[in-house]
Image (cartoon, rainbow, N blue to C red; front, top):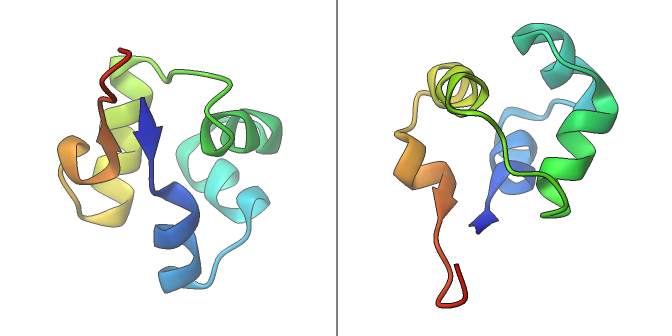
Length: 66
């Protein structure tokens, strides 16, 4: 699965730490998601979706290998 959280953070001009604080996770969790090392839970994906005002499908997409 790939994501564009880093792009969305850049658009909002916020750090990983600020995003993490806003949605109630650690900065390391945000970093792991951005690096595609961690697949977020449904709840976390929905929180991110709500924060950015985007659908989950706009933030995350499946790759052929998924």
